Amino acid sequence: DHRDLHSFPTRRSSDLLISRDQNRSLSEEDLQRLASVVLVSALSVPVQHSNAEQSQNHQDFFELHLEKEKNSRLSALLGKSTTLRREQLLKEICHHDIPSKALPEVRNLFHLAETKFHPMELCNSLSDVFTFVQESSVLSRYAVLLKKACFTRQLQQLSKVFQTMKIDRIYQLAPVSCPHQVEKLIVRCANSGLVTARIDHRQKTLTFVNNSLESSNVKSNLFSEIGRAHV
Image (tube, rainbow, N blue to C red):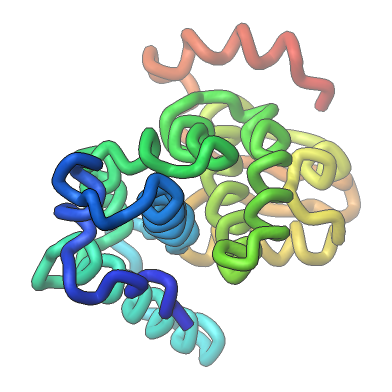
C-alpha cells in the first residue's frame, strides 16, 4: 500500500518540491513529509542488476511484480509517464534535490547509502535512520525493504575490497540480527547477479569472486579499509 505517495494527488511532486514559494498552501512539515516518503520509498526499491534475468521462483516472481508496481507509482509521483528503473528514480531524486528537502532524520540517507564508499560501516552508519524509519507511522512500511537494499549495497562495496571474510563479521555488519536472514539475503544477491559470492559453512567464511579487485579505482580504497577490518 503506497497511499502516502499520493497524499497530494492533484499535483506532481516535481511541482510540490521545487520551491516553497510556489507552494504556499503546503506547510514546511507537509513538504518534508512528502520528500521523506519519496526518498525512503525510492531507496527501498530492490537493487537491480543491469542484465537481470527473469525470476526463477514464485517468491522472486511475486516480488518482481511488487517492485514494478512501486516503481510505476513513484514514477507517476515524479511526473513521469513511463515506469523508471531504480537508477532512474534515484537520478530524479537528485535532480529535484529531494534529500535536502526531507526530514532531518533521513536527510543523509542518500549520501550514506548510495554515494559514500564505506564498506565496513555502511549499514551501521544508518542505524539511527533505520530506527527512525521503523518508528515512523508514515515510513515504517519501508523499513524492511530499506535494510535489504542498503545491505545489498554494502555487500557490493565489500566485494570490491575483500576476497574472503569471516561470516561472523558479516553478521555483525548486517542490519538484521538473525544469521539465517543474513545468509538468505547474501544468497539472493548472488542468485540475482548483484554479487558473486559463496558461503563456506565448514570454514565459516564468505568468499567474493571479483576480477576488479586490482583495478585502480578500488586500490585507493583498499588500504584505508583493510586497516579497519578484522576479518
